[in-house]
Every structure is written in C-alpha cells, then in structure tokens.
Image (cartoon, rainbow, N blue to C red; front, side):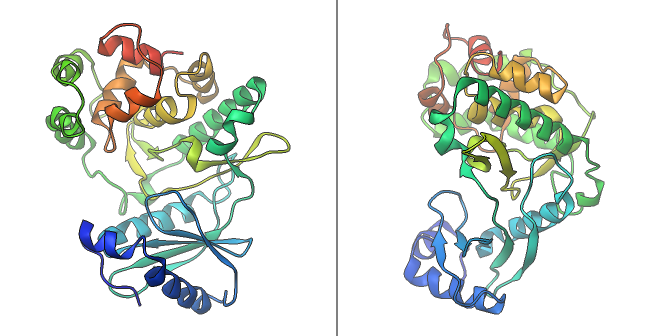
Length: 306
C-alpha cells in the first residue's frame, strides 16, 4: 500500500523512491493478472509510469492527482479506435488505497518521437507532422459532450480570465526578464481571443514526447498521455504544436495547419501560450529559435508563423 501524497514534500519522499513504489507496483500488477511480468519504470513524465512486460503500461496517480487518473481512463475509453493514430487501449482503472488511482493500458509499439527526431530525414519529418495534424483534426472533430462531467474548465472564458490575471506573475516567478514580462499585458490586449465560441476536446500537450513512431518506416504508431485533457478553444492545442512538435523548424507549422485544415494567427497562438497552464517562457527562450526582434510579435512569428 502506498502512503498518501498530498503535497510537494510527500511527493518528493514517495514518488521517486523505488523502494516504496516498486513493491506496490508489483502488488497491483499481480491483482490485475500480471504477476511476474518484468517491470521497467519510464524515466520521463510527470506521473510514475511502468512498462509491464511487452504489452502493458501501468500509470499511477498519487492522492493529490487522483482526479487525473479518472480523466485519463475516461478519455482513453472515449478515443479508442476513433483517431487515425492509435491511442492506448484501456484495460483497467480504479482506486489503489490512500487516494491513489491507477490506469492499466496497452503499450503502444514504436520509439519516442523526441528521441528519434534527430535521425529522421526532412521528408519524413514533414510526413509525420502531416499525420499529427490529421490526428488533431480528428480529435477536435469528436463530440466532447460525453466527457463534460470529468473535463474542465466549466467556463472557458472564466478560465482564460484567470490565466490572464496571473500571466505576468507566472513568468516573473520563473525569472523571465522584466523587459519581456512588462510587455505581456499590452500584447495580450492587442490580441482578440474568441469568446463563447467553438469548444472541442483538447489534448493540450501534443508534443514529440507523447508520440511514438516506427523507426523502420517513420510513421506514427501512437499518441498518448491524456491526463491533462480539457474542453476549450481548438487554438489552445496549437500551442504545444509550435513549442514542442514543430519547434520553429521552417515550414513545419504551416504544414501542420494545412493537414489540420485551418490556419491560425501566430499572435493568437502566442497569446494562448502566455495563458497556458504550463507556460514557462524562460525554458522556451532557451530551447526555441530566437526571435528576429525583441518583441512579442517577433516571438509569435518565430515559433508559430511557419
């Protein structure tokens, strides 16, 4: 049995410690009919995730994030077999004592796209981006209503208002230089975001790290990690595309949007990036191409323009 994890201190004491986690994983897998399966913990990700043999993945959600386990299970069940890119088949989900939850899912074949990317030829990168654009279009075409009881936010416009109110302080807390933070309000004021408009099922983190690819053919073989899913404006999902999939590589953002079937204003996408739940512009400026000028408009073009 795992101890409760309700704050950062408890998380740090429990979640990284395999002497605590591994016995519980072994016990849970035995309960799920996978006794004796070889267990390997994945190094990445925000939650503890384990490969169980060659065919299963066990994802655990600590007490403080238990609702994300419910979200993941519901979204996986909703999506299975409905996208042009495979998503993990849900095998089981439920509670595991002291508020923890688990999701047991099928393991997707292929290699982490973020690892494979440097080896992939340019033409194959373009095709992969096209496949990802088609997959996101299919996701957004699904009716999100069956998931409305588990996915937030309840009021999208109110969510954006809260994010906007904290946008400057979020980046200051991450040590973004004042020359940039001071200009956030004026930039956001200059961008019109749709109010009360289209609402779709959002992945929110469609990035290389959440895609797998066949290294023999360079075709997408899976999309995973739906715990942060939301219902909201489709443009919000394009934030992760620009920041973590196309990453300013010339031509790829335009190719993605062509496959998606719709083109978005780069300034609107940057505004959503500033309002995003996980926005960290210190990291973005370190990892992504530098803008041609010291302005938010130049950042929008560098990261979301083409």
